[in-house]
Image (cartoon, rainbow, N blue to C red; front, side, top):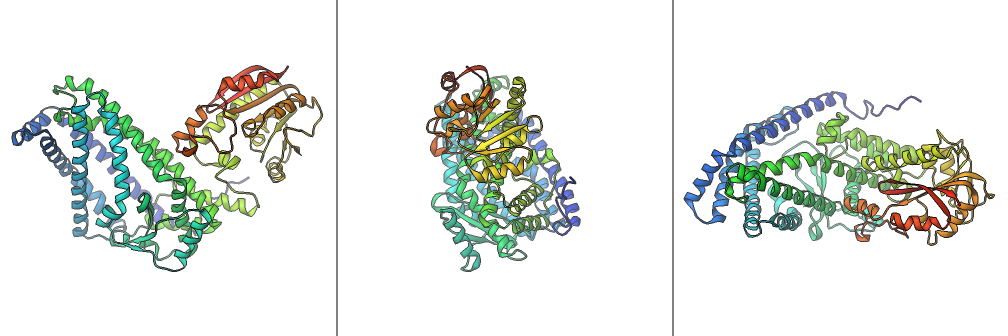
Length: 580
């Protein structure tokens, strides 16, 4: 089949796409230049200049807190002066050259002055706490400082909409009207509430359009840039609102804070080790010597550069989930697609960046992928199939999260290897659902399926037209004894209140082998917790009644089968069993 063209000239302005690629290339070069200049500055400052700056600060005061502040201010201002040409070129010249900025020199300079003041204020407070903890708790400062960063981040996130954001933008409540009513209806359908929707005067600084979920707790709100007011239909704006509401419903703000704090905590620990090892080599009096600040910054900077692509990977997965939420809630894939195309044209966004660029630098999926996601949803609606759902098999198999897809592919590879070992040519998938597993294995093995849900079987038949399907319960299979040399039971037992009747039926229907898998605890829960899923249930999926360790699983099966091989495919465990 000929592959569908992802984008058309009606959706994407190809002339602006050419400019977008140029603009993206220049911004990437600036990013590398900033990174290189920062690294050179820190390396050059490590010895003589840092000791001289320490001596200067101590000549003005003997108080350790004041000495830290003086050192940091001088060190940061020198750094800012060195980076100013690049900042001016990237923040003012380039956006004006490509028609994105509306700021005057005065407005841009005023914003930079505010940013500098906030950076010095918050940076000084953070460093003072860290260095105090370092002196008071030399072995555990990194742990206490990590907890402080978590609490400080929560506080700043809460205060940002009421104290920080108004320093740069004017916020006004969304006026009563169709858009406000649509948001109210969306929130009611989602069973949640938002504190309010505000518009911000983005047009005072840029021609680009944007929206965001900001704040936390009693200050959480959705903000829409006023640059969305023209050229976007009510359906398109509703889709944007639904995307931001998706972040609210999924708890992405809290998840992001937890992930960020965990990374910083780990970075503090590695920096603790680096300064204990490297400090004496570079002549510093102690790890908390203020002259060692460049080494502290270098260690943390290197750690964040390495881990940022992983944080971006997580962020892209959350954005995909919010996009899917918007599609499911609004059921307007055409509006979603056209909205994404308009954002690409308006913001000069590269629709299809190089994969390595997206992996390293993008916190959101490329717009081309988001448009494709909308088109896939549209096709699913047209064929009257249930599009991706946040729960069940759809969440498992169609979730765009690349790490989840890798784990599932690896799982099916392991299943395929075990199936081939049995030599079976007549196979039953008990609890086949919508036929995803059969679809992945059917090219090699003729597999039949059975399930209790008729709509799932109809979709399984559509997905696998060469397979036969039966309506029936795994605990009372409508099949004769020893009908199949191999039965599959993948991710079923943990959902059953009593798995024993199902195991009895699997033993009855197979003539030789059964291949059975369940989530491997506690690793399955741990994987969920690490990605911020099901936090209230300590990582357990709500549909899972049983949670088995490998040992528990083996003891369960031994009453019915002889276990030939046990295979671990994180976060699942798979048992190849022979009929006893």
